Image (tube, rainbow, N blue to C red; front, side):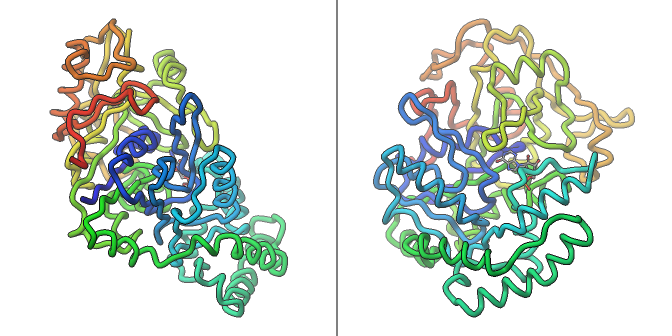
Length: 428
Ligand code: IMP
């Protein structure tokens, strides 16, 4: 059974916790896109750990983690994450594999990311500054350096030198920032090469052979549908395919092999970084959600923008990912709020729009069309069975499910693995 888990909003939906929980039944957990811009927060006993690049599932002893070809890898970040895991007593040796076809993030990618954001001024995207966009830009421009290239010394040197010949001019003349020295990068990356060597594999072959043996595979999406470079609120997006299709191109597995797609959605909406957000709450209510929900970025620590649940966003995610079910997280954050609202459409120039507009200008001009729901004063925090949920919470969840047209399989009521109501486990 092969399951893809994706975010339905702008990332930070709580995929880390869900993937961690579902990994109990999976044999292999695969990341397929993004890089260390992601931040998946997972409870480890009473502590929490934030993973950026390594698949969350490796926190379970014996599970295999794969970083697919669609991911961009900063080797320094990867090695430091492996070291952090080891300091928590978790060894990934022999059970973490990285695709030899994955592209590398180079130091100049980080410099371009930062300089480009700076140059954009008020038009900036609000990237994580990790070099993600420029690394994917090189991949598409066919000048990217892949993991496998590190093992062909002459090719690696030649690619590095020819890339730097252009990039240094650009950095110096356009951005007026420091240039890079190819010898220094060469030495640094050769050092990484020797350390990552044990993890490098032809992961597409590995996954196919596991599928042939009927093993259970979980494809762990990073970011969210509306940050997808094709399907998201372009250009305020990340540079990869965070939607379910990315699980195929980012791992070398065909679409006929995917059995189910689970969409993770928060019971309200958040966004980090710039870009349109029609259901955003900018005043006291937004601040209250931010404080109660601890809505601060797991990667950059930035305050997340908060808003009501936006059914237009999630309905779109149901469609473009072909979602088979939903997991709703952080329902407990809404405990004690007398009035709740769901945005079921956008008001634009006197009309109600029910579908996401493709034009950013139109989206920016949309006001939320809100429907009120009575809240609940009881606690849902740590509730572990559906029947214990207050009636109004059940009604609110039913309203989400019918507004977006997708059934709910899981409801998360806290950060611990056990704080989850499992109506149906997609792994059976
Ligand atoms: P980049 O991925 O660093 O290029 O950033 C592009 C946009 O995606 C920015 O708005 C980031 O804040 C956002 N972003 C990237 N990764 C994540 C994530 O894991 N969660 C939420 N937002 C993200």
